[in-house]
Amino acid sequence: MTAAAAMLAVGQVAPADGAEPPPQELEPIGGVIAGPRGLTVRVTSGGCTTKADFAHYTEPRGEAVTVAFARRRLDRCGGKAGEVEILFSYQELGLARGQAVVVLNPIGR
Image: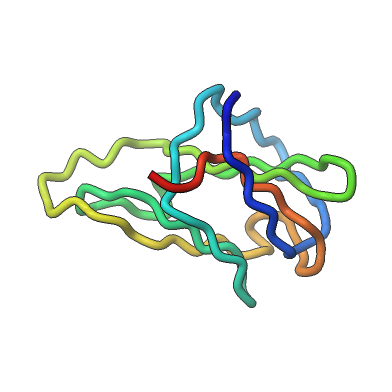
Protein backbone atom coordinates (compact mmCIF):
# COMPACT_ATOMS: atom_id res chain seq x y z
CA MET A 1 0.00 0.00 0.00
CA THR A 2 1.42 3.37 -0.97
CA ALA A 3 0.58 6.06 1.54
CA ALA A 4 2.08 9.28 2.77
CA ALA A 5 2.30 9.11 6.54
CA ALA A 6 1.95 11.96 8.98
CA MET A 7 3.43 11.71 12.46
CA LEU A 8 1.37 13.34 15.17
CA ALA A 9 1.95 13.44 18.91
CA VAL A 10 -1.28 12.24 20.43
CA GLY A 11 -2.02 9.18 22.48
CA GLN A 12 -1.27 5.79 23.88
CA VAL A 13 -2.11 2.76 21.83
CA ALA A 14 -5.53 1.18 22.22
CA PRO A 15 -6.75 -0.73 19.15
CA ALA A 16 -10.44 -0.46 18.34
CA ASP A 17 -12.30 -3.51 19.67
CA GLY A 18 -13.52 -5.81 16.94
CA ALA A 19 -12.21 -3.57 14.17
CA GLU A 20 -11.64 -5.14 10.80
CA PRO A 21 -8.42 -4.40 8.94
CA PRO A 22 -8.49 -1.24 6.82
CA PRO A 23 -9.22 -1.52 3.10
CA GLN A 24 -6.26 -2.17 0.80
CA GLU A 25 -6.62 1.22 -0.88
CA LEU A 26 -7.12 4.19 1.40
CA GLU A 27 -8.81 7.40 0.35
CA PRO A 28 -6.61 10.49 0.20
CA ILE A 29 -7.46 13.08 2.84
CA GLY A 30 -6.92 16.81 2.65
CA GLY A 31 -5.14 16.93 5.99
CA VAL A 32 -5.21 15.94 9.63
CA ILE A 33 -4.69 18.03 12.75
CA ALA A 34 -3.99 16.75 16.27
CA GLY A 35 -5.84 19.05 18.63
CA PRO A 36 -6.64 19.04 22.33
CA ARG A 37 -9.82 16.95 21.81
CA GLY A 38 -8.74 14.56 19.06
CA LEU A 39 -7.80 14.23 15.40
CA THR A 40 -9.58 16.46 12.90
CA VAL A 41 -9.58 14.95 9.41
CA ARG A 42 -10.33 17.03 6.29
CA VAL A 43 -12.13 15.01 3.57
CA THR A 44 -13.85 15.72 0.27
CA SER A 45 -17.60 16.13 0.27
CA GLY A 46 -20.30 16.43 -2.33
CA GLY A 47 -22.48 18.21 0.18
CA CYS A 48 -23.68 15.55 2.61
CA THR A 49 -20.60 13.84 4.07
CA THR A 50 -20.91 13.16 7.79
CA LYS A 51 -18.82 11.47 10.45
CA ALA A 52 -21.08 8.40 10.20
CA ASP A 53 -19.79 7.94 6.64
CA PHE A 54 -16.32 7.06 7.97
CA ALA A 55 -14.78 4.16 9.85
CA HIS A 56 -11.43 4.27 11.61
CA TYR A 57 -8.87 1.55 12.26
CA THR A 58 -6.08 1.66 14.83
CA GLU A 59 -3.19 -0.73 15.34
CA PRO A 60 -0.11 -0.65 17.59
CA ARG A 61 3.18 -0.40 15.72
CA GLY A 62 6.20 -0.18 18.00
CA GLU A 63 6.17 3.08 19.95
CA ALA A 64 3.47 4.53 17.70
CA VAL A 65 -0.09 3.71 16.70
CA THR A 66 -1.25 3.56 13.09
CA VAL A 67 -4.62 5.08 12.25
CA ALA A 68 -6.49 4.72 8.97
CA PHE A 69 -9.75 6.37 7.96
CA ALA A 70 -12.05 4.74 5.38
CA ARG A 71 -15.30 5.91 3.84
CA ARG A 72 -18.26 3.60 4.53
CA ARG A 73 -20.63 5.34 2.11
CA LEU A 74 -19.95 7.43 -0.94
CA ASP A 75 -21.19 11.00 -0.89
CA ARG A 76 -23.39 11.17 -3.99
CA CYS A 77 -25.10 14.46 -3.15
CA GLY A 78 -25.44 16.96 -5.93
CA GLY A 79 -24.44 19.87 -3.73
CA LYS A 80 -21.39 22.05 -3.99
CA ALA A 81 -18.22 19.92 -3.86
CA GLY A 82 -15.68 20.87 -1.26
CA GLU A 83 -14.11 19.66 1.95
CA VAL A 84 -15.43 19.11 5.46
CA GLU A 85 -13.59 18.65 8.73
CA ILE A 86 -14.55 15.71 10.93
CA LEU A 87 -13.37 15.40 14.53
CA PHE A 88 -12.56 11.95 15.91
CA SER A 89 -11.99 12.20 19.66
CA TYR A 90 -9.02 10.46 21.22
CA GLN A 91 -11.49 8.38 23.20
CA GLU A 92 -13.30 7.24 20.01
CA LEU A 93 -9.97 6.26 18.48
CA GLY A 94 -8.90 4.45 21.64
CA LEU A 95 -6.02 6.88 22.17
CA ALA A 96 -4.73 9.14 24.91
CA ARG A 97 -2.72 12.28 24.26
CA GLY A 98 1.06 11.92 24.29
CA GLN A 99 2.06 9.09 21.93
CA ALA A 100 3.02 9.25 18.26
CA VAL A 101 0.38 8.37 15.68
CA VAL A 102 0.98 7.51 12.03
CA VAL A 103 -1.92 8.31 9.70
CA LEU A 104 -1.83 5.77 6.86
CA ASN A 105 -4.09 7.64 4.42
CA PRO A 106 -2.36 9.57 1.64
CA ILE A 107 -2.42 13.22 2.66
CA GLY A 108 -2.92 16.03 0.14
CA ARG A 109 -4.47 16.08 -3.28
